[in-house]
Image 1 (cartoon, rainbow, N blue to C red):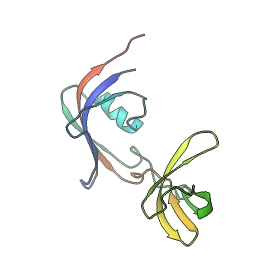
Image 2: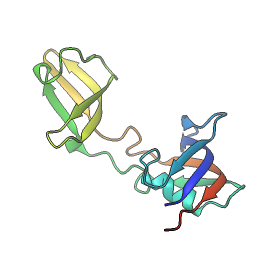
Image 3: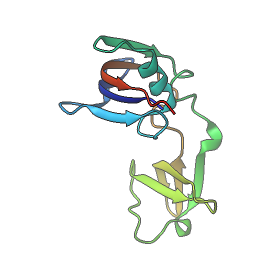
Length: 139
């Protein structure tokens, strides 16, 4: 797998900053989970040493907003130590060991609405990247 060192800036299409490397380059290997696969494919297309901007539609980036990913849960389903407040990020482990992160959208008495869509679902994004170095691993 290729290893990259990049500087990047991920923004909403409207220009609002989502995430950036700031002053420290990000080192990652393709598939290590640090970058979403849609962003990895941009890095793989980028030329080393050249600042490039990729505009991704919501479908190319993090997908559409799925209604079924918005769950109404009972307060009793949350661990007692978990912070339950509006816009708080919450993480649940499935019996298979996967974890899902959601955002609390609404609290109504004992009913808590959690949105498990990716925070950027339904958003067009701009991914600006400069590949500082690329190392390919050969077997």
